[in-house]
Image (cartoon, rainbow, N blue to C red; front, side):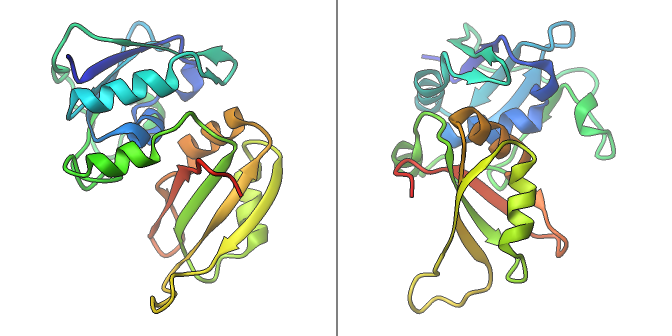
Length: 207
């Protein structure tokens, strides 16, 4: 088996490495992403294990995203070779065609296979968000997520007993699973005013 998948029929408006990373990292730890220079509707994604590639293939094949149906196939390659023009840190996100990701960038480590298996699912309308600044209001988050589709429900989630409330978390339900996927692609790792990054994930069980 291969740890690399090829994704076809992407909408070029959302086919940047980081937006794809935010979606595909739901299914496993990613090492590298490359969008084809002459085919912006096609990208290669290299996971750290074939198990993760199989999860992405299973849950994302045929999913409708930004007006197109994703086609996810296994690559014959075992890795993505680095391009000859590495991107500088100041290069605009929408001009980048490849990116590498460390363990720190990913949601879990490659040793946390069970966590990926438990959280993996088809994209959902219901999203879980965490690491939100304590001063953030519901109105602010509704405006943020509402840029990507109508919002049906919103709910704060109380911290676990005994744990200090150093940040906020909660759930938000978009109108469709496609809206949820688009919001996740744009808002996972969203940098807030205090420089902390918001985390966004699909919620399997809904509200």
